[in-house]
Amino acid sequence: MTATVESVPLITSSILSKKLAEGIDALVLDVKVGSGAFMKKQSDALTLARTLVQTGTRAGKKSWR
Image 1 (cartoon, rainbow, N blue to C red):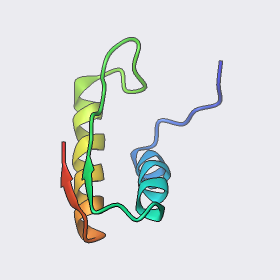
Image 2: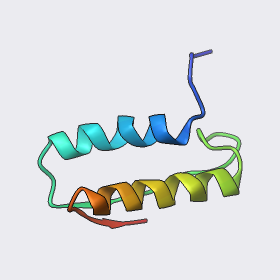
Image 3: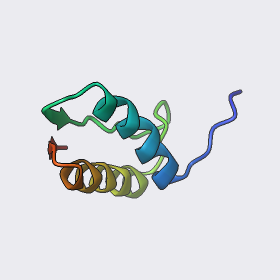
Image 4: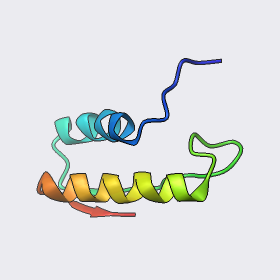
């Protein structure tokens, strides 16, 4: 078992800080959902996807989910 936190803001910052530091021009996101994925519920996965796209866009990057 790992010590993970299901906090959308923390997950968003963790993912995007790495990607933005790489100097990307655009970001394509594949947020998985289900029993084998980090996000178990579809509603949580959609919230994460929307937050990732919004944050990426605000950082000046083209973002898709």
